Length: 155
Image (tube, rainbow, N blue to C red; front, top):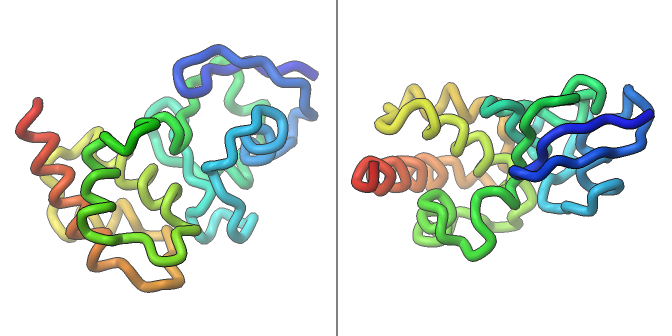
């Protein structure tokens, strides 16, 4: 069965069973490997992408549910690390092992799309469910605050 949707600004059509998780369509059918598989149960956040601007877990989202909608992956932020979040992540040395980072960045991007001046509580709420085995949560929060400040300057 063919499903069409907009991926990172480009229309794509894939031939996959309707219940195939979006994660596997993105990685295996389309070939974008930035979105990671973590737990497969929507608990860790490694597979976070945006669906019509909202952060979702792609490991349990059936591809049929994104038909006609806009999906954005980590590759949509920037190819050259110029997105304010990517710059802040680098500046704060956020990644250690790096495995969770695409999901962390996509959750942070969804937050900053709707809240340009998040409080610690706002950040904690938006990032809850994104697990970092290396425990870089304080650096993640600091990076989000810096990126938000940078984004406020340019808006």
